[in-house]
Amino acid sequence: MIRTASSLLVTAALLSGAPAALAQDDSGTFRVGIMGGENEADRLRNFQCLVDQLPEAIGVEEVALFPAADYDGVIQGLLGGTLDYAELGASGYAKIYLEDEDAVEPILTTVQTDGATGYHSFMVARADAGIETLEDMEGKKLGFADPDSTSGFLVPNVSLPEAIGMPIDEFFAETGFGGGHESLVLEVVRGNFDAGTTWASGVGDFDDGYTSGNLAKMVEKGVLDMEDLVELWKSPLIPNGPIVVRSDLDDDVKTRFEAFMMALPENDPDCMAAIQGGDYSGFTEVTPEFYQTIIDARRSTIGG
Image (cartoon, rainbow, N blue to C red):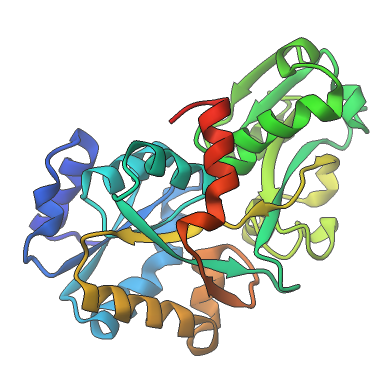
């Protein structure tokens, strides 16, 4: 993808934490932040349909994609005003809210094929490692996806102590981060972690990686065979992450963008599946209150 000079300037601002004014000028560029954790080329390809369709749909001159190396890159871009839209996990949104509750507006979230507006954290291990239950992980090495991941870090830290009957650092010999969900699962397959936490809808079959989520995306790309993994633990339902827009984005652009996204499952289901990572029935509107439990959990567990 060829970026314009203005797009490169915004990229530099995103990485350096430059003032927010760059994203609020009249350049006519709609700036899309893409979370880390998956191969960059795949992320850019998945979001190309928005580059092609959004300019006409929402009345901007161009759409620029900014794939961050990790979750925090997008979070800081939204806090700094150098991004206009991103799709976050609930914990990532909570981090923004706890620092500046007026920085972004959550407008939509996905609806699973069974009608649920949530998904699950899963702990998976290599199928040939002799680890078949959560109890088998005592004294072993657990990998998390990213410090700002809801399913890959926050929820396991909240839910696992009850499941194992003790603090995480007393049960596992070691914990670490895998550099995002895809990278983490690959590290588990390679044996660098005994198990790792990632996300999936929990709808459908484990053998397929379920209907959506990181496991399903990896299976579809051909980088993961689910026969190589075994499921050890499944979290309670987690609120699906929000689509957020910059709060001071032009109101007409916001309205057009939300309408475009609401119609996307019917107008272009392939685009919907690409940017969301699997099969969903559509979107529903959300407000900050939808994420209050995650905001509270993040505040009490790992802070802002």
